[in-house]
Amino acid sequence: MVNVVAIIPARSGSKSLADKNIKELSGHPLIAYSIAAAKMSKKIDRVIVSTNSQKYAKIAKQYGAEAPFIRPDEFSTDTSTDKDFLVHAMNWLEKK
Image (cartoon, rainbow, N blue to C red; front, side, top):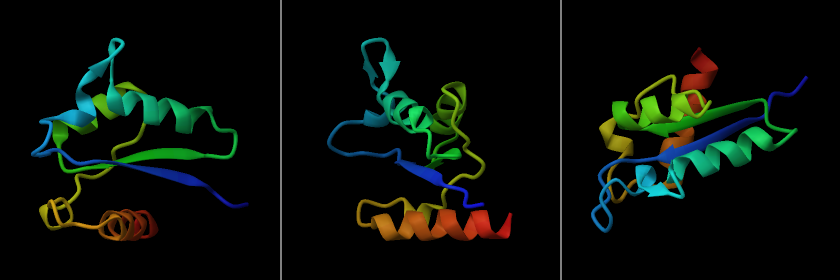
């Protein structure tokens, strides 16, 4: 059996639009829409939010995602790549 995991990035600290991932759009934080889309998929078994923020993690959990870890600062900079947070999340999942 193959488990399919959706990993949603939600870094706090955006310089162009502060807290853009939790800005409200039609009454819900922006991240809620990504979580809902992943949860609606019949092919995704788990929805995990990779974030460097306890506040974002709490909101993600309220919308039904897992936020089992806080992403380290070195993978949460303006110059961090998608590969950085994905490898961190996959390594965390493999160990746990």
